Image (cartoon, rainbow, N blue to C red; front, side, top):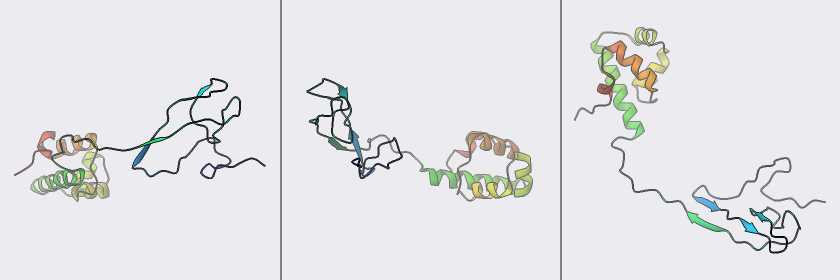
Length: 145
């Protein structure tokens, strides 16, 4: 009877390692001391060529988050900001959601989700909406402080 690995399904050719997503795995290449085959760590712990035990060690390292400049707005607040500007401009132009959706070739529910800040629309959609409302595209991204 074949030896089954506890984390590998029997019909899958892909390996899966039981690790938290907070960790990455370093898989250095291992050279078999008997046959000199250069390989990654096999699941069985045996050399792929000569079937003798390999000596190896895993190094786990914690993922680090870079200390880059923080974004001025998060995606959620950006979506809400853009949505409120679209709604304000649409009401100033006295256009209904259905009419704006028809002009911009979107659906009314998707336009509603954009205005409520639930969805951040694609750049193409933002271009169509801003053109229909008579706005420049960059005006949607300027914060009103």
